[in-house]
Image (cartoon, rainbow, N blue to C red; front, side, top):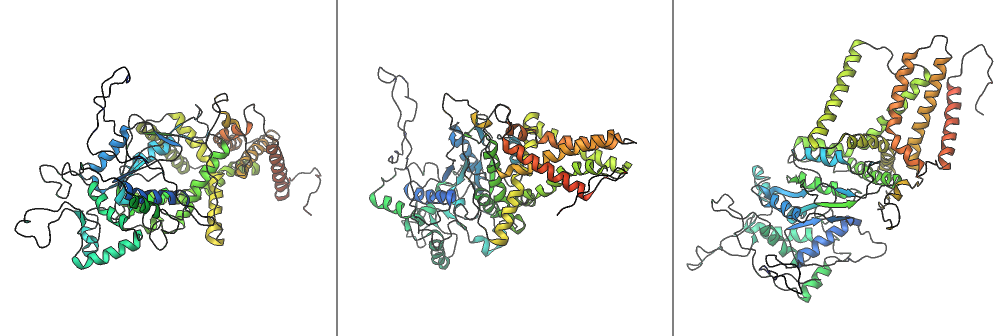
Length: 590
């Protein structure tokens, strides 16, 4: 632990024989640094990342109590230190007291130049989150985010419920107030100690009891809440537009050194049983009970009326690593989709949101919970061209003018939307196409598995276990992208392999039928082959990932492909046997 820095700047010295860098105009104070390792007991649910973040919030409230909190994953680092100031400027600007967090885009290193599995996720970070910024703000994505401490405590934003009367006044409102019975000497003077005064005198005792029940039995933690709210206020200007702001220079006061009692209390609030019978993880801090606790936490804040901001800096604020192996990438997408299914079947579904959340924000959050279920239709669309080729019937029975006009309008609309996304966000066509390809790969592998897991949890109560994402850790002598070519078998690969094999078999069947037909119908063949070929193009990165570095397909892929081909062929012969004068061998199931 490093001691708290002094309140006044400490400048460095001139360059000399010992110091080669001139730091005369540089503040060389080091920030307070504390390494925290929370208590863990066997058989006790520690709530993974959400529990660790809540423990850090409590212990930091006692030791440093900064009004703003930066959240980074272990695989991310600060690439641009000035981004922290940019994020806090949003919260300290006019109207910034309603901002709960500032989200930065995730940027990754160590990804292959072709971005085979859309690891950059450019469409989400450069298109979707930018659009969220025009609503109530972007969702919280788990890392690269600066929080307002009071928002994490579960309080509502200022002026969010003024129109709701007494209920609207029951919020945290900390400001400098005058004494109740001031003497003649004390008249005109104000207390410098912040306190909670948003309630009547009778309500203050009730609220103190509610706060203890909500945050736990730590008096130091409760006393730090109004101080953090006061420190995070806007600075008063000369025009008096920020009436409840803090005076300039009010924070430039010496900090008391930490004593043994403060350290002991900081250890107490991160013990295993401190959260028992409190609202930590249910209303306060990071929310428990979901694989994607980040989305749920941000949703709760927006549901209370807070706003968020998406900050894209010219120089990347933070950078991290991402899984470049196909199996690890699919497991990552499976975890995200499983969390979305959990959200859909929970009270965090946007359907049950409050009136404080804007309508379009509700639609956006509802899409977060519903998108894994679109995999059901995606699977149908991937098998439909093959079914058309098997049966010899085109997808549409009759091509009418209305149908063609409708299809043309949809095609033009989707094309214009894609061009708008590319032009507006600045992403390249290659990045957009990689995102489209991996959407089909994930939608036919990880998303159906997530829906199945979610239904098992809701219906049968089966707990969901997930695998942590493994990151690249190559030696200097190895290839930078060695893990990209590693083939790790996973049952998530079965549906895409099935789709590829079925469509390839269907193309062969369709071509053979048309060539040996007395009246070849080439138009139906071209239509069916086009849609099957369109499906296979989307699955090309998946097929390339199965080849490994040297283009050698694993034996298990041949086994699965052969079994699927035999099963599909036998089923089709059984369902629709060929009709001809030639006597075929009769086949029937035992």
